Image 1 (cartoon, rainbow, N blue to C red):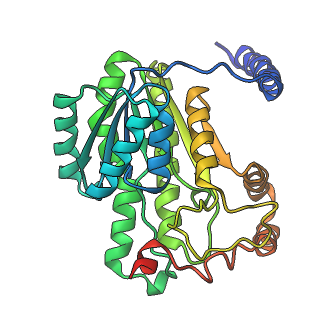
Image 2 (cartoon, helix red, strand yellow):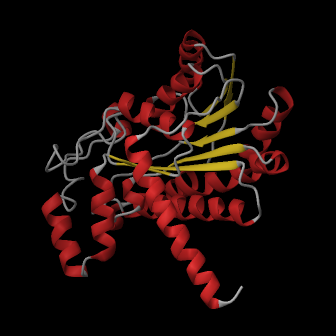
Image 3 (tube, one colour):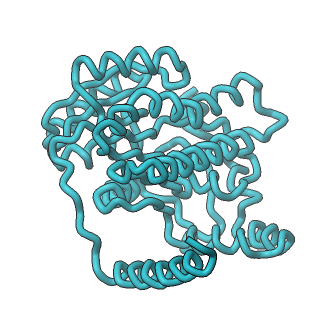
Length: 306
């Protein structure tokens, strides 16, 4: 096609997609049926991972739980059975260890079958300013929050590609879209997770695997204990999210094949402003929203338990 025809096509399709988006603003999207799908959730032993497992279980799915907390997984397994899961399987797996991810993935394939919905949820946060963060913790943050996604995709994506069917869910963070003081390693890891998820989504489309859907989740702080002590300057605009609300929104995004989910809704506006404002105005906005002080009173789950 020549330049004129391709440009005309893009303009017409842009109008169509804009109208489509406006229609879906007022008319709910149709939800897909995930009954019988094999759903693997990393970091399922507590927090948002447990709540997501319960939400998926209510749709008659087969649950595969991964965590380093055996007791936590047992409790999650009990809860999801009560919620209607067809079957529940749980495995100890340190997602920061590539070889362990591959080993446990093979065990899952033998004992359960092919995973059709993969939820990369496991994550950690040091909560330290960059120069105060030990090298070992920085490496662990990158290994769990970013590199683990590479290894789980390597393990489970081939079957999805072969069947042209599946859903990849990445639980990233708004800190993967906007830098935050005191979260340098965490932001870097989440920026990496965002870029990786976006790239794989485009790769699936470019190779004709449009049956493999992707959902990239970027929430503000969720009140699961992981970010205990963190504060928000304007809770009406940027509230600390309730975990039950977040889990329900994530499931809805999966059921409607929503590619991006930012929470709260104000994050769409904030991220948009960040990308178009002059740098100094962006910094001013960050100061106004309290981004310089989010982590000032951080306690965190691990520190709290000591």
